[in-house]
Image (tube, rainbow, N blue to C red; front, side, top):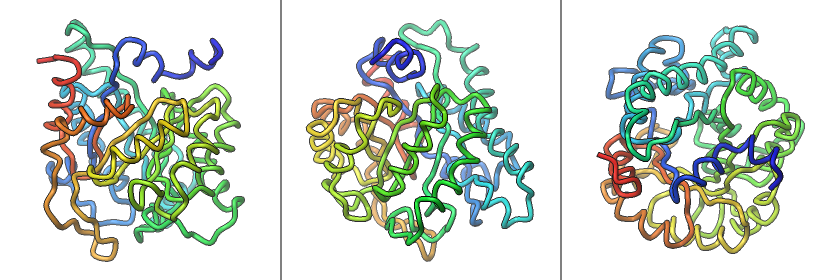
Length: 320
């Protein structure tokens, strides 16, 4: 890695200080706990319009729990999605930029409180870039067969990437990506922003394949060594498949491995509800196995909480 690549890669800076980087957990669950209604195609992006101060509060909760990184509320914030609500393009882009500003505000507020904690380093803001399927709001991010061209995907993603970079995000988070096609498009678009890095995490069918069925090893071999990709891994998968996936990623790419699974419950895209028994309480214990397998960046996705992130931070940082 060149000096320029190191400077634009905040993950490397954190991993130079600590063996494990701690991510935040679920945003939507916490917003709902604060009384926000997410029954909307915009999902958590709806709160940008109605209660942005609650987003700041949730980010701050995770930073106080020990997270090294906040993932912004832009997962489902897109020009096309806001357009369906009658919001014009420039106003939509400003809302997208706002997601970065809210996370940075929370980071700066908490940093003033905790900067003297032993072994604590200043957290970063990763701007979420959710998949095209998230905009469709029909669960397509867990299937990946969109039936659209590369050009359609690029036109959809480009304005949001530009807005997030302009807003000053420390890096981008290409997350819950269900298809190799979409991952390739995103990595190609990233080259239009040469001073920006991103992590790339896939949604999984099981421990060996991404949602559309492409082998995880193939995805990692094709994209895992791109210069601007700072880490590669998975998110929003159940914890029981994580270790197997880490072993595959470790054999297929030299990049840091990032994992932030969900609580273990099952999501129904039609009813937009979760069911089953969650297992997120054991995330701290499970992380020992993940780190042993090669993971260096760990957090939580849907239905995980600041408590789980606090337990991770205590295990890997000995923070109180």
